[in-house]
Image 1: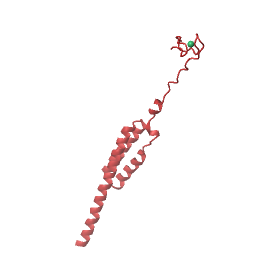
Image 2: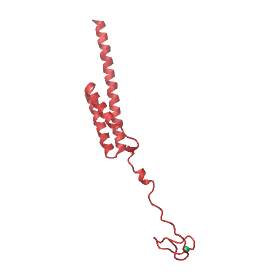
Image 3: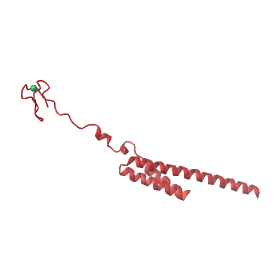
Image 4: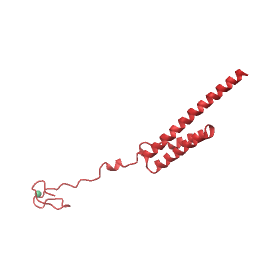
Length: 126
Ligand SMILES: [Zn+2]
């Protein structure tokens, strides 16, 4: 580099100009904010994968087995993705798990509704 005062060529690692004695630029720390950008987002935004695994198991046992199993499978996938730092895939899998859970609840609600309606109609008919 060149001395900022007199322009003399100074070798790297020399802290004072041999010509005029001017202090050279202290090498800037190359450590930048990049490091923080590479931190897994999971630390800032934890995905509640365990909750959805539990909800999937509950719905499998008490309501609709296939929907509950699919919810559990996708929530478990999301949990695995979270552990390996693949947050984007984890979010996608968790979204799928939530979708199946909601669909399962709606379908079971419809089945229950028509079941109750059917039994009411039955009791009035006979
Ligand atoms: Zn100089």
